[in-house]
Structures are given as structure tokens and as C-alpha cells.
Length: 491
Image: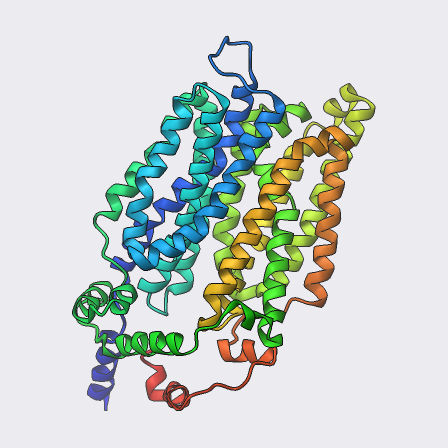
């Protein structure tokens, strides 16, 4: 009996896929997310440099132009999303990532060698286009190469590397005293990204969709380890693709109540994510601290806030499957309300008596923004994107996700563009009251409308919204096999 037990243990071990190659591949392509994050973070340290006319620089822009410089990356991303969708199907996931590198490098060249405002804005739009392609290609690739037992962990790499990229731009923004030089530094991750992509293999799902079954099997074996039996997983991929082809939907089908309800929730989460003011704050952190006149230097404050964002994003990956999506959204919205109100208090007191506010409350802007960034990063940063993948079945996900992504970038563009004019019109404290008000409405929405998806299967989630029962015989058989105590040892 003991020998039988040892034999069974050995068999279980052999049936577990290898993880190392998957981690290496996911980290390699996630350099695209770091490059994207550097593009987002660049505007914060670069904006004050671009406005500074004390250095007799060859190019200086005014406040209104800075608003467009910061916000137009969102226009590019709005275009890049659909372009990325086409590229991953025509060129492959790896092919789309490789194709994004030349325009990515060109965007930084346009900025670094800009002779006028039009070149600056063109560079920022092109950064956004490449970011939009990256947002589609990298998460799709990671999701398709990851084995089910580590898919959740690998899926957090994208968001994590985005915030690492933002921090990268903040740190070098404090070191490099030229916006042209900083653009050159931000191009370095793109070069590293290109080199690493050369060594990763194409997604097995894409290869299978193109009829290259032999190559798909070889690549899947590469990612799972040479001793792992990939037959069952490969068969599952075939059936998923066949099912998706049979049940393709049109935009009209999105009006079905069981699709429309989760779609509206997903769109609302995306809108509320941006109405919290996150991109407006991140793109203008240096300016916010400059206006606050806090006791700590602007560069140090920005770097500290960025580091908190990285640590909080790491924590979000660990908390999401323990605390649940809904609870984290509620905590996130509540903490953002509190932090924005306290930031408003500081700017209101500063408007009344600047010297007194800065001397007695100089610590408040940094503290408030740290709480704000942490709260956003553990909840409203990653969870709307996670739930976008959980609320819809495969045949709906492509259309719904595309609409949600476009909604997110459009809202981000509007909020970022209006941030500075709103500050001029109603004062900084008025702007933070507006953001805090949206977060309060958001909190009520989370409490009353958003469902909990933690631990629920796709069928349970779609059934919650009234989807018709589409359980197939194969799914019943799979469920029975999963319920078999001998089978669960191998999961």
C-alpha cells in the first residue's frame, strides 16, 4: 500500500505543468507594459520642464498646450485598441507586439527631437496608439500561454509592470533635467522589450486558429514542460475555438438583457475608474506637488507616491481572491473619498492663507495622495479589468471588452484634458470635491449593483444575469471528473 501511495504521488507530480518557462515568457512580454507605463508617467515630470522658460530652451509650451500634451495619449490609445485587435488576429500575438516596436521608438524620437508643439503632440498620440496595441496583445498572450493553476498570478504581471513603468519615468524624471533626455531614457524599455520578444514563442491558441496544429502542440509542450501530457488541453482549445465560431454575436445581440446588464456594470466600472481622477492625477503629480508647496521636494514626493502604487498593485494580486472583488471595490471607493476630501481641505486652507497652510499642513498632500494611490491600486485599478474578463462568456467577450476599453480611454481623455481648466475655473479644492463626489456615487453603485464574482464559475456568473442554460454534455462530464476525488489530486 505504501508503494502504491508513492507511485500515485509520483504520477500526480508528473501531471503538473512546468511553470518556469511560463513565468519567463510572461515577464518578457510584460516589458511592453513597462514601456506603456513609462509613456503614461512621462507627462508628469516632463510637463514642468516644458513650461520652464528660464533655461532659454528651444521649445517652451503654455498651460493649455500642456493639457493637450498630457491628454492626447488617450486619443492614441483609443485608436490603438481596435488596431491591436486586428493585429493580434492578422499577425499573431507575438507578431503584433513586434510590429508595435518601430512606431513605439518613433514616438519617442518625435518627442525627443521635437521642434514644435505639433511634433510633441504627434509623439504623444503615437505613444498612445502603441499603448493601445500593447493593452490588447500582451494580456491576450499571457492569458493564452498560462496554465490554469497560475493564470491568475501571471495575469497580474501586466498591471504591475504598468505601474513599475510609471515609477521608472518618475525616478528618471528626477535624475534627468531635460525632457528631451527623459524621452530617450523612456525609449530604453522599448528596446529591451523588442529583444526579449525575439526569444518568446507564438501563442498556441493563435497557431491552432491558423490550422498549424503541429506547431501549436510543440509550443504548448514548450510552455508546459516535456513530461506534461498536453492532449487534453489542446483538445479543450480546439473545442473552445469551435464553440466561439458557432456562437459569434453581433453588436445587436449586446442588447439582450442577460448581456446588457453585465455590460452596463462593466462600462460603469470603467467610467467610475476614470472619474476618480486617477490619470489626471498621475499625469500631473509633479504639478500638484508644485502647487501644494509641500515641505518635501516635488521629485521625492512623486517617487514616493509611485512606489506606493507599485507595492499596492503587488498586494492587490494577493488580496483579490481572498477578500473578493466587491469588498475591495467598496474599500477602494471609500478610501478614495476620504483622501480626496483631505486633499481638498489642504487646497482650501491654502487658498485662504497660503503661508499658514503650507507650514501647518505641508505633510497633508503627500499623505492624502499616498492613501489615494494605494486605495485605487488595490481596488479600482485592476478590478474593472479583471471583471471585464469574468462577466462575459467567450462569444460576447471580444465585442464587450472592446466597447469597455474604448469607454475607459475616452473618459480618461476627457478628464485629463479638463483637469487644468477645471482647476482654473473652480480652484484645486473644487476639482478634488468633484472627484470625491464621483467616488461617493461610485461607492453607492458598488454597494447596490456590483455582484461578487470571487470563486464563481462563468456559468454561475452568466446565470446570475439570466443567461439561458447552455451546459453541454462535455461540460457535465468535465464537472463529474472534477468532482472525482482521484481526479482532483491532479488539478
